[in-house]
Length: 255
Image 1 (cartoon, rainbow, N blue to C red):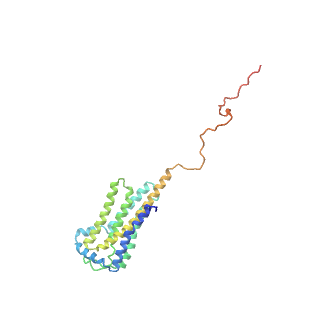
Image 2: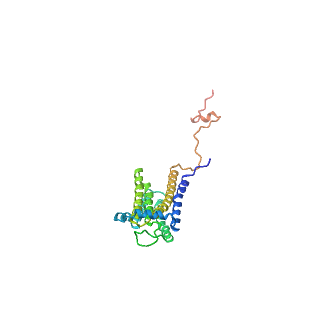
Image 3: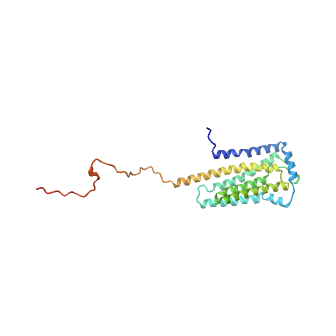
């Protein structure tokens, strides 16, 4: 009977679908494939520039999303250090590192694909993938991941994850509604960030298990290797060995 894949292995395999979908969309954009035709039709049906959509899109800007992540990462690091946890700085540093990866991945793709924008924006290129969507997804998603261990109740954790997801969806809707991006630009950024956040989650889970092992090891008694003294009574053939010592016996007078 084949062995069942471990949880980390299943998680890594779970990153393959968004990675493959991202590769497919990127190929279609670079090759001007047939998938772009329905994308353009959907954009024309959804575009309706207004102030509300512009404000929603701005939530994905670097000036808004990145400071949120920095504040949450600082708070998580402070809590970890105050709790005396080992490697307390790893979750916050990892979240910030994933944020740094976003422009390093997105900017070269924008230059390479050279996709033009929608009719709602001035003529230009470099709209694929959506940088605002990627910034929002990683900033708000990573902030939620590093904050979860410090939330006491399950309802608070669910609320944090739901708020993060709603912020990303709001930014995505605003970008498409305002005409800043084609729908596929946004979907591709979702796929890319699913891989990045999935990798971050795997790292945080590994750190959490390592801390639990350290706490478990610290709670065990120290094994010195010295033999424990025996409490069993050893029987001997000499009956006097088990008698208490009563002092020297007085000699008896002989008649």
